Image (cartoon, rainbow, N blue to C red; front, side, top):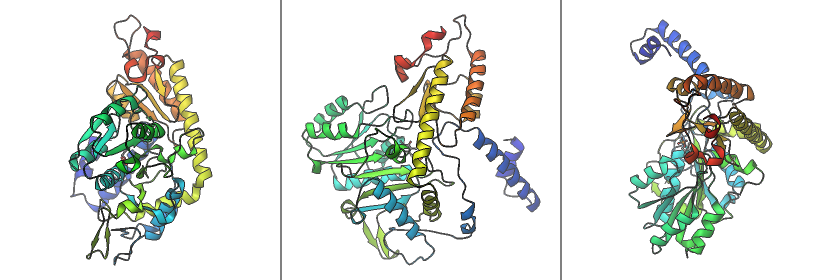
Length: 415
Ligand SMILES: *Cc1c(COP(=O)(O)O)cnc(C)c1O
């Protein structure tokens, strides 16, 4: 984006004529930035033209989705329809679940952990180191004691270490955040092993609460063959997912589903709303449920399944081509997140909008990441890399064996 445009966008004294031109130029930069995006798990491929007619309304679902408020411009029916769909996906009966459309995956985590805390007021929060930062934010906000559990190289929770930490606090209930796809490595925690570990250490089902953070894979896993199932038939308390990630939505949103019995523990009736207060936020985006409803209807189970398969296929293609080029890469089995060495050049990272952590970066293969886009990225990466590193041993690419495992790191090849 040009500096001139940036200044004009910041100005609140732009004349009418220039306003149109600022917006048109801003639109062009959005098109450009959308084209070269690889690093964040957002599906940027969607078409919601049919919903443009609704932008003239201030749709607000404040309060509880299941209880009518006095504010009439809402989209609760769409919201409940979407929630029913997710409850069915995660196998919780209509009359046994409660949930709402959140403003993002973070809000789902804040809510799930709050429900856990209300069910077990003196519970200790356990979360792996690779958990999303919102989980640790929840611990700070709610002033909960929190144990960070080690992870395996894959990014999965290390249940040996989990067991050791549980044994330190046997007398207190456990609230556990289980990752259905970690942010950086796309690792899926072994839910069954987590439950087994709890049982083996003497935690009966009424002494723990599991929140599943499925921000990214919550909606992908059900469509992956062989993937362990996230289901309320197992002793879990809540599941959350982001709506703007795999689903693709022009505004951030998310879905939170929990057991109805738990919600009574934290809700309060509010006369001003003529509703019940069980959500984190007050006013809630009433457009988001309509966008979700629209996509779920249009794609259906079959459509999502196809997209998930395409993402996994393309992710494998990217990983294989990286390795062919002598670049170490890791791809977890149930994931479309390809982890690779952090590119040497900040400009390159910015151009492709790669998310980085320490020595590694990742590409999250979403439905809009096509083979052509992957090829363009690879060709550029390979060409640029040749200028960053030399064969004489002076300028070597970083070894990332400790981040992605020795078997995935090919650093020995280009020494
Ligand atoms: C993205 C992400 C979140 C947060 O979701 P937002 O919608 O960005 O708030 C939480 N957990 C995981 C694992 C994520 O990948």
